[in-house]
Length: 457
Image (cartoon, rainbow, N blue to C red; front, side, top):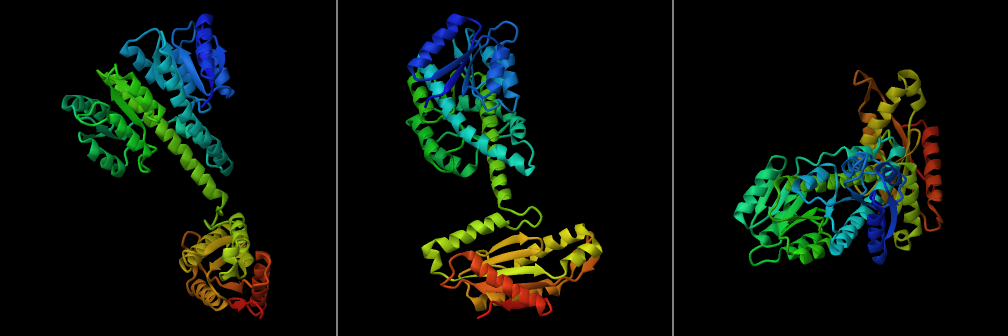
């Protein structure tokens, strides 16, 4: 997978060296010689990943990383810090700033390419979520990017797969201050525990006794229940080849033994933040999809959803062979309710009306607000007689109990008129069936309201 890599370094020879290495692997590159220029490039969306030198005059790499990760516009960008320093405290400082990984000069080509490819794949998934989640702002849901960026990465549920007792105890103790940790020494049992446990992250030792830890990572990546769970490998420094293979097939990060306590905590927090970032965006996407087909006042489906569903019922040859009926419901004298009790009371009546209609329809029925005080109900696999009986039952339930308004301080008598029609073989589209139901509704109103009328024979 190709991508555009932003190289940030104040030394031109370093920039050219990285540009050459990445070009040989078919990556596009863009360069910045200082922090402010790098931030500007990122804010314009001109890169997919950032290779960020730590030691720069003025604004150093740590500050640049912190600014990028705290900005909703750039928080999703993977940042790999590049430094000549190789102390745990330096890595911790970078991870605390939000860096996704650390590369030490002189840069190992294998580590560079595997890390860039891994992070670019993760970003591609996040980008799709971001673009869809931004649509949720059109529905007045606030800014999902700001909400996702504010995630702390704490109070997660972790699974640690480690059969070295001392190592397991040390890591569990370090992580236990911030998260809930489950330790599993048996790799076979770990698969079942992970699938059933709803964990936020799994750490896997690659050196399990009599079992290939990398195979366990592969199994966790392939299972539906654990496919989205972040994975961190724990490996020996000499096991670079397996680390690269793990990153290639989707493991998110790794730690080298001896595991530094602070780095362990920081890397876990980074992965949890990234996971929850995606979850917030995914929730925003789901909510916006629901709002796009839902009436905001009543919670019923809206006209758009109804039209799409009707089109499918009449266009699919298989569905045309099955019966379908439609009801059009109109609250009687609704304008008088608004005029007498106020529009807020009218809204209360509409919400209660929608709730009662839902209670007395089947799960397969489609109930949608058609406009104003009108509701349409589609009844799959229902003939005219069955549809008429359902309509009559709804009419009785609406009339039978007064509606409470003004926060349950007043009662309003409400009735409904209903027109019923079913699909006929000669119907070309749904409009013809709905027109007959609308004519039946007109007759119900003309005949005194609070009644059900079926289409003319």
